[in-house]
Length: 200
Ligand code: ADP
Ligand code: 5GP
Image (cartoon, rainbow, N blue to C red; front, side, top):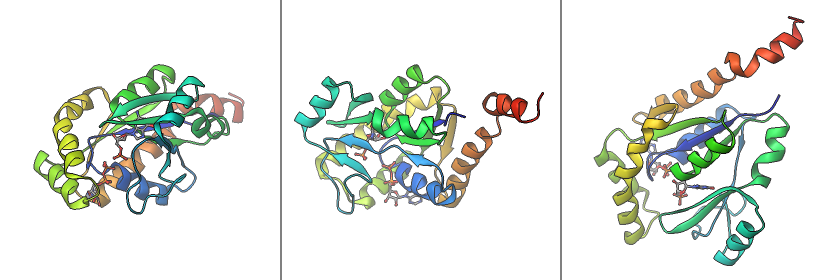
């Protein structure tokens, strides 16, 4: 059986990385697509684990070599999902989480129609800004850019399959886990396997 893609999007500071980290501790066999980016690494981020950190020349070369399933410019930097991050795992039947922006989500959905789109929302605009400031990983300029773009990004939650409000962290992590586990029982996904198994 082919693996499923779970796309996670939301404005910067919504809690995407935190929730993905939490759900990966609970569903240990789920894969994660490590993106390439031209953004500089933050303190604590590891090359090859959080991102593959590359310069613009390398990123352009990868675009020219058709190495990306999708790529986009987000907050002034380039980000992309490589075929290498996806193909083998999916073909081996592994589910994969992608943390990508709304442009990337649209492109993935166009190419892989059965992908599940999940949008992470903050409990309020004020809380989003507060969490982003308290995270203290971005320069003042980057912070302003990210806050300014949040409203436009939030509107796009309308075309996602699932909306998770990240108020209480435990509840939100559970909700994300539930979406993934429920999908694994969905008829569209497992009926043919059930039929083969039980000779129906
Ligand atoms: P994103 O990946 O969407 O940009 P992060 O996962 O980095 O967001 O979360 C932004 C900040 O908010 C981090 O400092 C994180 O620890 C904090 N955070 C995330 N979820 C919650 C929550 N439910 N309650 C309080 N703080 C949270
Ligand atoms: P950050 O710099 O906070 O890690 O990520 C910034 C934004 O880029 C987030 O919205 C994140 O989801 C998005 N992003 C990360 N990797 C990719 C990718 O491979 N493709 C696209 N389109 N967006 C990505």
